[in-house]
Image 1 (cartoon, protein in one colour):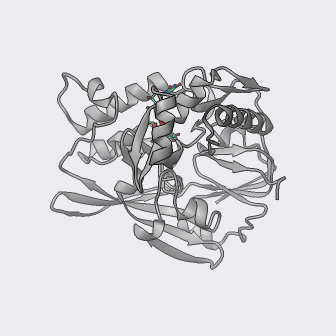
Image 2 (cartoon, helix red, strand yellow; image 1 turned 30 degrees about the horizontal axis):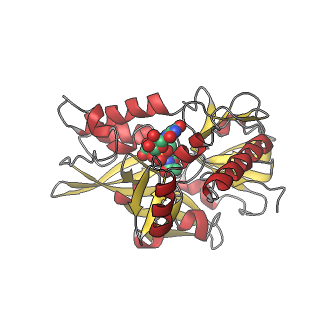
Image 3 (cartoon, rainbow, N blue to C red; image 1 turned 135 degrees about the horizontal axis):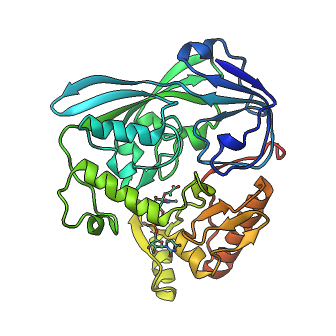
Length: 337
Ligand code: EPU
C-alpha cells in the first residue's frame, strides 16, 4: 500500500482535469484491503485507469487507486480457457497477452483505455463485442459489509454501458479481479461497419482483427495520451422503434440499429455532427473535430468547462431531434452532494 497526502489527480484521469484529494491510497494487494480505512461514498472515490471519469470537483476525502495485478490461467476444457485477472492490470495489455497465448475473445476490444477492474463497471464495448460476452465472474470487496462478494454473470446485470456496479449500487463494491472465459478456437466477429473492409485480403486471425480494430480506432478517435478525453462522452440513445422510424423519415441519413425490446439505437455522433458542433468550445473543453461523440481537453480544461460544453451539446441535440443525450462517463461532483 502506498499513501500520498494532498495528491494531484491530473495524471490519474485521461481527461487531464486538474483536481486534488486529501489523501491517495494505492491498493497493491488483496491483503491491503483488510488494512484500509472505511470507504465513505460521500467523500471518497475509487479510480482504476481514470479513463471514464469527469472530475468536476476536488475529492474531499480519499482517492483509492486500484493496482491489484496478476493474470492466472485457471482451467482449460474443450478449447475454453478460464483466466483470472487483477483489477489493476491495464486493459489493452490483457488483450495483447491473450493474443500472445493464442486465445481469442478480446480482440475486438483492443486499445480501449483503462483498467481491467473498470471494464465491468460500464460493460465496455466496441466493434460489435461487449465485455459481458466473455465475463464469468467479478470478484469484489463489499466496502459496506467489509467482506468479499463474487458476482456471477447474472448478478452483474450487464446492459449497454451499464452494470449493477455502475448504476444499481454505485460505490459499494470495489472490483478486485475479473474471471474471463476465452477460446482456443477463433470465431471472427467482424459484422461492425468498416471492420470486414479493414481486413480485406488478409488471413483472418484474432491478431489480424485486433490490428484492424487498432487501425480504425487510431484513425477515428483522439488518443488520450496526446489530447485528454474520456472516449465517447454520450451513450447512443435508445428510443421506441416507432419513434425511431419517424426520426429516420425526417433525417434519412441518421445511422440506426435494431436494439432489444422493440427499440432502436441511434447514432449520437451523427446527431451532434449534424448540429454542426464539431470544434465547439467552452473554456478549455472542445467537441473533438475528429469524432463528434468525444469531448476533449484542448488545453487547461476544468471539470466545469466539460460539464458546460456537455449541456450545450445536449441542448442543441434536444432542440433538433427531441432527444436528451445521456453522458457515458461517471461524472464526479462532490460539490453537488
Ligand atoms: N459519425 C458521425 N460523425 C462523427 C463520428 C461518427 O456522423 O464525427 C457517424 C459515423 O458515420 C457512424 C456512426 O456515427 O455511422 C457511428 O460512429 P462509430 O462507428 O465511430 O461509433 P459510435 O456509435 O460513435 C460506439 C461506441 C464507441 C466504440 C464504437 C465502435 C458508444 C457510446 N460508443 O461509438 O465506444 O468504440 O462504437 O464500436 O457506444 C467509448 O465507449 O468510449 C467508445 C469509444
